[in-house]
Length: 40
Image: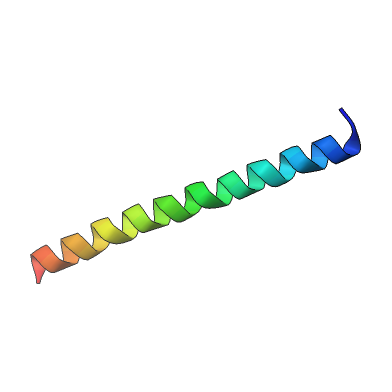
């Protein structure tokens, strides 16, 4: 594996990691908002 291939792999994984964190944040935010709407 060359350095360029390694860099490409790292960029792909970091991008997918950010997408996972973003989706997790959206789901948690939706749960918090719905819980708030129910309790108010």
